[in-house]
Image 1 (cartoon, rainbow, N blue to C red):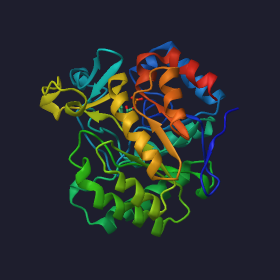
Image 2 (cartoon, protein in one colour):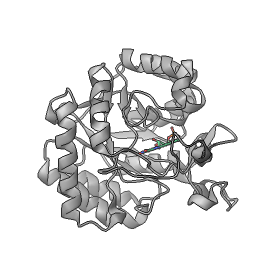
Image 3 (cartoon, protein in one colour):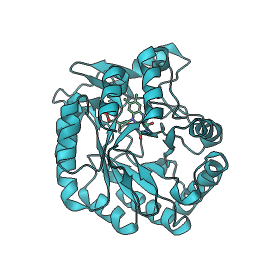
Image 4 (tube, rainbow, N blue to C red):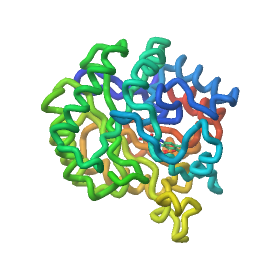
Length: 309
Ligand SMILES: Cc1cc2nc3c(=O)[nH]c(=O)nc-3n(C[C@H](O)[C@H](O)[C@H](O)COP(=O)(O)O)c2cc1C
């Protein structure tokens, strides 16, 4: 078995991490679940004790662009040439009260699940209230999750490419928020998911504040990846690119990031093959995350997990 990341308080994360593509519960999502190879991947994830990070929940229900039960909104997730995906999903979700019991059921079935929470900075809430919301979120999650409080990590999504909370503008808010979480929940292992548009100082500050690991990076805004300025989803903010077309930018960002911080880094974005995985490991990834690969080629994703767990 490959080494896991061990966080300070004994929490652990597997060498390969499946990020968000198993849905808000971590147990699978529509329409991918219709594919037998995807269902087999979920079995493999369970057998290999692979860490699964859920799709983001917000405090209350949020309606974004993509809505699973409205087929006319499926256009907000598009395949791109060369193993890419463009999505302007927009964080549609039922809110943490709805998802926590589902996450709990998945965890009790033996999947090592880490919930992902999205703090909504853009709603103009006072930072104290935002941090109190996260305290409340953890109280709700702890009711359902089997792990003890100090070894159940939370991932905080600070980096959706397609939301008003977006990007470099929110650096100050992120640092305040992380400091607040560490103040009120000092034993909670926190993973901060950042964007390659964030300055490296953000990760350095998060390390100082006591964040336990960085997940870099989220999908990348369309106009950063392609010189062609018109995104096929221009009417929905442009969307975020993931999969192979995003790899070069994500890789360069992570290479530099590794030199700046000592805390564990889950490196991801663009991993479509064993070579991408190896490239991230060679520059010092403590773990490597996959998402688009699971949607595009779940069999290949299973192979990668089997060979590196
Ligand atoms: C359809 C789709 C939905 C996503 N939803 C979320 C999300 O809710 N929260 C989040 O932090 N990242 C989300 N992501 C980003 C992925 O977790 C991952 O960071 C990104 O796609 C880059 O990795 P990849 O190239 O392996 O896909 C989503 C990605 C896709 C393709």
